Length: 443
Image (tube, rainbow, N blue to C red; front, side, top):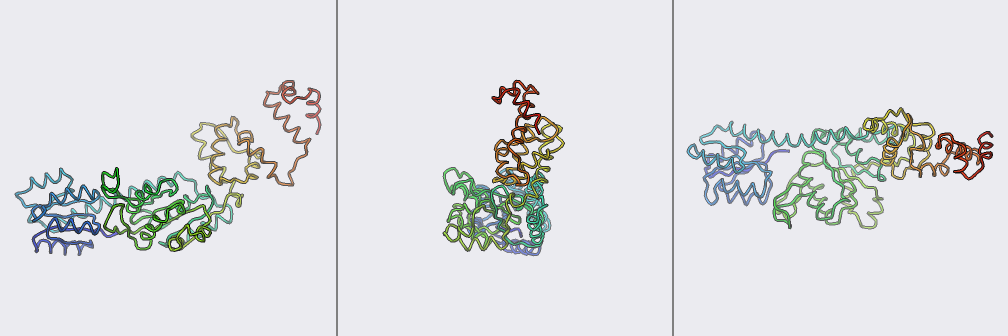
C-alpha cells in the first residue's frame, strides 16, 4: 500500500519542491502551511509519516510532533530545521522524532530518510508474516486421502491468484483455521501479515477495540491510541473465526471495512483506509442465520464470494488412519517414549468412532494415549473408556462377536491385568476358578 505523508512547511518554494519530489517517488503526499493546519488534516485522514519544519506560525514543529506522538504513536516524524537550530532537532529526537534534516538540504537526502522509514514499516509487517509462517509450520498439514478433502485442496489451489474473500463453513474441530492459513500461505499475500481472531471469545466492546482499534480517551482505560487488527493486517489477510457471533453493530462496521476498505477506530473521527483480504469461518448454519435476520445478507455476500465447506471427520473416515499416525509422530518426541505405532485393535476402535469433536478430538485422543501407553504400540486400553464402550454400537456388522467370545476376551484381559493370577481373577469376576478355567479353555 502506498505510504501517505503529510508535510508541514510555511515556505512555499520548499513545500512545493518537497511535494513534487515525494510524488515523483510514488508517495501520496499532502502539504500544509503550519502545525495547526496539519493537526486538523490529521483528524480527517490517516498518514504514515509527518515531515515538519520546526519554525512555523500558530503551532511549531516540536509541539506538532508531541501531539502526533500522543495521539498517533504509529506515525513517524522527520524534523526540518535551520543549521543554527540543530540543538532543537536533537531535542526533538529525544522526544520521539525519527530523524531530522537541516536547511538547506538535498531533496534526495530527505527521500532517503523517508525510504528508511518505509523499509522499517515493511520490516514490521514482514516480522508479523514470519511469525505467522512459523506458527503454520507447527500446525498439522492437510491430510487428504479422502476425496472430499482433495476437493477442498483443489478449490484452494484455484484461489492461488485470487484476492477474493472466502467463507469457510464446517463443524467445530474440522480444521477451518488450518484451511484459512493454507489459503493465505498459497496466495499472492503469503509474505504479508496473516492475523486471526475468534469472534466468540470477547465481549462486543472488547472485540470492537481489538478489530478496529481505539483513540486515546475513547473509553475508560484507553490511555493511548491503539491500532486494531484490521489496521495491522493492512496489505495482508485477516481471518475472522466464528464470524456469526458478531453483534449487528459490529457486522455493520465490518461491512464498511470489507466493502469500502475503510473504517473508524473506536472514538475516532477520521476514516482509515486499508487493503485487507478477509477470510471468515463459522460452524453455524448460515442460511438459517440469514432467514432469522441474525446475520446481514450484504455482509454474507461480501464475505462468501467463495464458500468452502469442510466435511466432518465421520464423513471422511479414510483420513482417520493417516491423521492418527501424523498426531502420533507429532506428539511422540516430547514424551521420550518408544512407541512404534497404533495396534490394529485400537485403530479399529478409532475407525468406528463418530468423532463429534472432529480432527481436534482425534488429536487429543492420540496425545492422551501416548501419555498412558506403556508398550510399543498404542493399545485399546490407552484410548478413552467411552470409545471402547461405544465400539459395540458402531461396530461393523461383519465383525460382531458372540457373547461367549466377548466373555472369554474380557476374562483374558482381567487375567493379564492381574499378572496371570487366575485365582485373583476369578475372585474379581465373582466366578469359581473352575468356571474361569473352562471359559478360557473353550474356543
